[in-house]
Image (cartoon, rainbow, N blue to C red; front, side, top):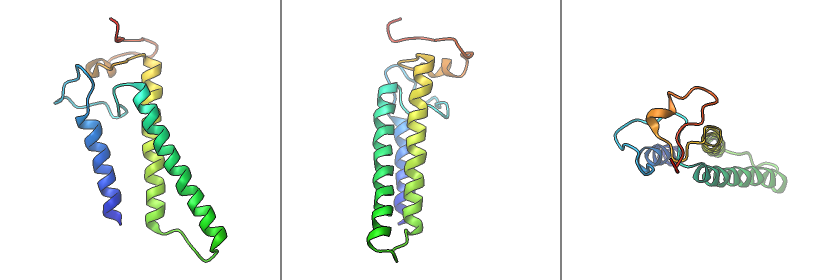
Length: 124
């Protein structure tokens, strides 16, 4: 069961490493917060993980009400925390991309931009 969570983390890391936007260097490492190249993609993925977290939470509550002796397992807790973390990472990425107005992101600029500087946009 824990291997399923480890596999999920590996899939996440692989996806953010290999699925790059147009013009991104495939060999260059991404900044730690950059999960997708566009804010919309991050919002959609963050929302999906948020829904999964809410479904898990509802499952815990309904299970506890229907069968009071039912206690969530460690795996359930790990799954829940994993969903929270992934949801946060995607929504944080969207927030930063929208603030910096980097759509698509030029990774070499992502670390060099001071706060308040908008950077490169898709139309330039």
